[in-house]
Length: 390
Image (cartoon, rainbow, N blue to C red):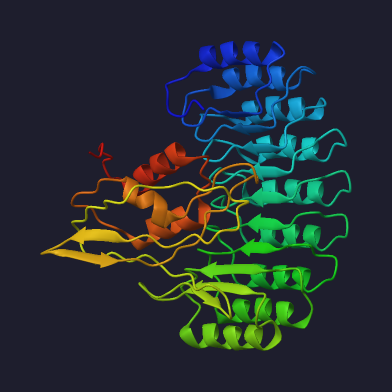
């Protein structure tokens, strides 16, 4: 792992040379470095080599442009063993996505997870990806497209793709986009079809109202028994009445299997579950907080219960509170995953403003590689200063 180490294209070239030399490395994290498209070219040449054993590559916030995306796409096309690629928080547009889409459409591509969170792929990029996952050569299972300026048009393209029996996608993240009730209706029609294999659909932080929520709930109620989680968190146009209606519709048909996440008011619990563990939202009512508990990563494949942790707040005497939060979904099963409740105490926070939108952005969209990357992202989103704990 080489997170935030000021590694440039020169360092990337040296690493690429090492990977080419019968290296047994399986996971490489170069996130938050200035790799650029030149450094990406060196890495791409390495992973396209038959000697390369790399399965997972993280290049989060690494100053990668469409040129870099093209180099990686060419590598994926050339018998690469790569299974997971994280390109979130870069400068990739629909042009770079077009190259990646052609790559995952190739029979040589082994990619299962692609993370493009916080780029600028737009509806055109969504169309390219939809065409790719619509092909029976595509083996992609998980696709992160949050915060990419995707509207109802892009949602429609993706809906048509997941409606096809060739599509193997089971996790789709579309949070922080510009999807309204029209896009929600297109997606509802798709998940109403028996061909749809989606297990998780994240539409949080969009422009969906009660109408769109109703379409989605009815689709799940009527036909879809694959979908397990629908996230509609912080769609401000979903009212309490709309939420209750969706809750009733889903609880009547699937009392023990389905998880609907909504949030219409600040500090309101976000999860609606039946006979399941209740997930809630962390709320902080003071501007001065000192979070003392250390973070503890855990293996995602372990089935032990992840118990909530106490957090202590200094505000005219210590108060103890905790609420459970969502697990931040990881891009592959071999990696760590964290809950926000475990990450946040790692920060020594003094006189900061805990804004709701930043917290939900962190919960629903951030893909964290490990503890270090999680803390870095929390720090950058909340704009707080991390200090060493005693």
